[in-house]
Image (cartoon, rainbow, N blue to C red):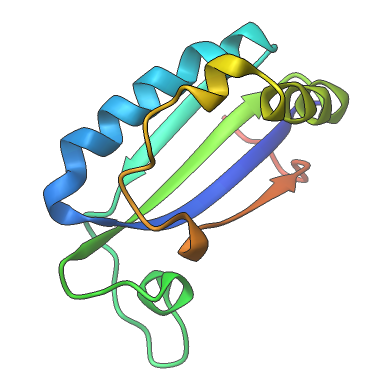
Length: 117
């Protein structure tokens, strides 16, 4: 069953192109390990909530934009094996530094419960 790795982060707005370049450089590493699709979303219509929101969740600063991303895998086993493999991959170690504060990024794995087209 399809499985998703989801990510949310706050990226300095001035680093938009660096973020895109970083994501494009990461895609071959995911694809080589079985990823089917990668989507990177740059926040455009992200309202500020009264209790919580993407800005609070990432501790975004005034000059940062929330991003919402996911990687689609054929199944959880492929995803888990890919993450284990990437942590030891020298190519992953050669990736440029992330153009945002990774300590404020959060992520998780998700199994679909509704998938409508």
